Length: 269
Image (cartoon, rainbow, N blue to C red):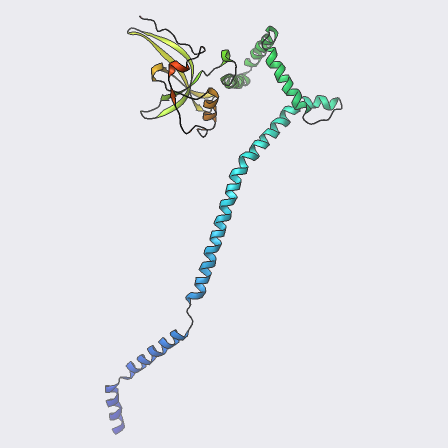
């Protein structure tokens, strides 16, 4: 009995649960202090991962830069080679039949043939043969549309001023206020009204490269004429606007009017 009373007195002074808890906390803190920090191997792993990402990003960027540089060059050489092979194939069978196998000879012959066609078109016989060929092509349902569209494009870039379809490059306000569109002046007309006569320009605005577009009749005073040639305007349309100059200067209409466009004297009504 006496021993149990002493044990109860000791528990009142120092509770056994508290003592065990304190000892556990002390041992735990010692073990945590003595154990190595778990963050050190993870930090090395994250550094390696970041370095790998940097290398991957650098390689990807340089590879894409190389593709951007080489892609247009590869396309240019490939299409040029295909064009030479295609044109060479017109006359190369003739040389092969004669026993002459020289690559490029058919291409040179094709160029000479094209030059002779251009020279012969200035004569009456060449023009008559061309008219006969056009009449035959226009009688065919599908080929007539292809030939008409191709002829319009070829006339647009023709160096002959008499057959030049596009006279000047024009910038018009379209379709809303504050927006502008590239177009080509194709002709100039006089619109007679009860209040007087007005000079209008037919402006062709391409909507799909050059062979599809809209025609607008616009007062010549409302047309802005940039310092661009017709060839430069065609390049801008075909390239989707990528070849447009950084700065465009609007030129006075009176200073760039050529005889092929003309300047009508507006009659009084």
